[in-house]
Image (tube, rainbow, N blue to C red; front, top):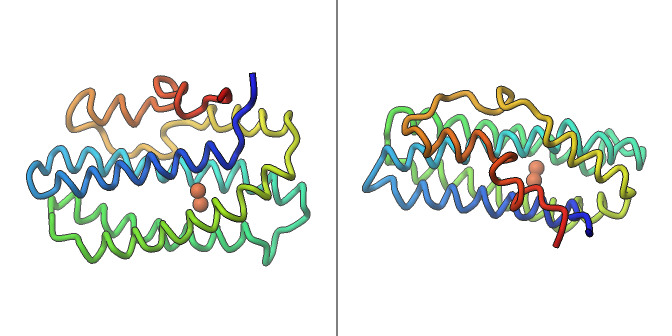
Length: 182
Ligand SMILES: [Fe+2]
Ligand SMILES: [Fe+2]
């Protein structure tokens, strides 16, 4: 059974997060409760993704290649800080159920899509080249073990919608998200 690549796995997670954000935007004018649930799934998923990168993936790559200060992962970490600031800015509005968030959405989407493109085109392929099979397995195993409290900070507003979909993505969605087989 072939193991998934870092590039393929992380690209799929970018796509999944993009779709959650687009769904939030689709619902916000008609059903704000639903929109808010999708935004919270997006937020917790994005925070988890960033923790996976900063605490598991990047440190391993940095150790393997000896690149730390001034390297590509350093740039990505700086971009994460900007993205998280925009994310919190948007979340403040979502908690107020304010649908007038076009400007904040634009800033977040622009920062995120440029960042994701750099990771997908440059960093992830370089990481795939630098890691052996055992190291890759270690990355995926460590990702699975990340505690939910690290990225989930809001209780569900509709049981089963937010709670399960976002809280247990590595359990229920494991086949799609952590599948190492093609
Ligand atoms: Fe990132
Ligand atoms: Fe990423």
